[in-house]
Amino acid sequence: MEESAATYDPTRYQRPSVTVDVVIFTLINQELHVLLVQRRHWPFEGYWAIPGGFINMDESLVESARRELAEETGVRDVYLEQLYTFGEVGRDPRSRVISVAYIALISADAQKIRASDESTDVRWFPVSALPEQLAFDHDQILAYAISRLRSKLEYTTLAFQLLPELFSILELKHIYEQILGEELDKGNFYRKIKESGLLEETQLTREGRGRPTRLWRFRRERAGEKQFVFRWREDRLSR
Amino acid sequence: MEESAATYDPTRYQRPSVTVDVVIFTLINQELHVLLVQRRHWPFEGYWAIPGGFINMDESLVESARRELAEETGVRDVYLEQLYTFGEVGRDPRSRVISVAYIALISADAQKIRASDESTDVRWFPVSALPEQLAFDHDQILAYAISRLRSKLEYTTLAFQLLPELFSILELKHIYEQILGEELDKGNFYRKIKESGLLEETQLTREGRGRPTRLWRFRRERAGEKQFVFRWREDRLSR
DNA sequence: CTATCATAGTGTAGAAGTAACACTATCATG
DNA sequence: CATGATAGTGTTACTTCTACACTATGATAG
Image (cartoon, rainbow over all chains, first blue to last red; front, top):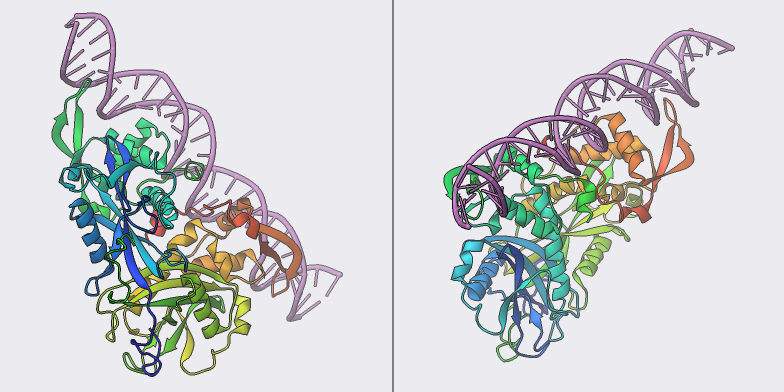
């Protein structure tokens, strides 16, 4: 961008392609899942891949991610966050492709809307049972996405993006356990989440086998103020 | 990247340009500085900008950042980290340009090697006294770089990259204070850094006006193990 | 050659936060 | 109305953090 006008000649400059890939997470039956698509053509024919595609010249990167997401899942208005940009030279055998990866978190109740789920080449995979080897460098992208999710959970309110409008505290705890891959103490969890002031109590409850659950709502307006909600000990985070 | 071979046609596809911009930090007189270049040509003629340039087709993104860095400062073997990718549609008036931004940390003693410092259009600015308005969206990039630096300081060993081979503990404390923009307690800092096991004591000292300082060396081999070195309280981090 | 100054580095007590686990509460069902 | 099941609270020992007072070591001045 700092090239002088003299040396800058768009017609001569060889350009890479730019794609946006979106790692889409959701909870299904309280378990963390990722959406993958199966490739029909060369290269990596038959392999599972992270959904994505080339950007249009008139849309920003997020817009592009949002479009991909809508095309693949029919879901709108979700949490999107840029993950990383992957640009190794040989990562796509066809040509030089630079991929800007995004993470999307879809709340559990939004899943009804998703469209292409039934088709044989789009599927939700539990993160605990992913395909052996993904197309391109998508193993790496996915691994990085999961690790980012894990570490951001500690100091952001991002877990709420995965929940429906109303939820119980133990459901929230379950998400944390899913993503962190470890059990948390019930009592301590209650205390922390209540002290955080991030939840708004409702008068609603949900009946089940035992004592009915109080339902809570996430206070989006507080999400910005309170950045550091959970701070587990070092040893807990370092796996 | 998930386009089928049928729909993918590199010759028809309109492509954005991709640049790599590098926000280069260093310490000069114990103060955090950033390297900026002054633009000679349209657009943003005369404005200061973050150094960067178009990527070559045969180099990866980091390689590209490394090349830019070497060209601007003559410095090699430094810490580089990808920051974010900026891709708004109108950010460069010439054409669609996507910029992958990197952060580089240069250790204080490496500065001797830097080359283009004297030239009028390349200069180190203290982060406390930056130019009013930078070219393109570089204000935004720079602000983000500083905030990233600040937050990563808490849980990584990245501050050491700014120091020379040998340094005193109080110099290290000074870096933290520079980047965090806040004073830290001397005693507590000593304790934390020593307990971390990240430093190796040397027999060397440096004499000054008062009691001579013991000099320490950073144990690079430990940098990986210990991820979470400093954990300041919430309220300290949230400014 | 000793007092003083300047900076280096250590000790410690009270406050705050954390982990573990026992305990109580409230509903459905038989 | 007892039992089972899940929801939610209390308590205590322990760890970590903060603030601040304290000691250490060399240079320099008189």
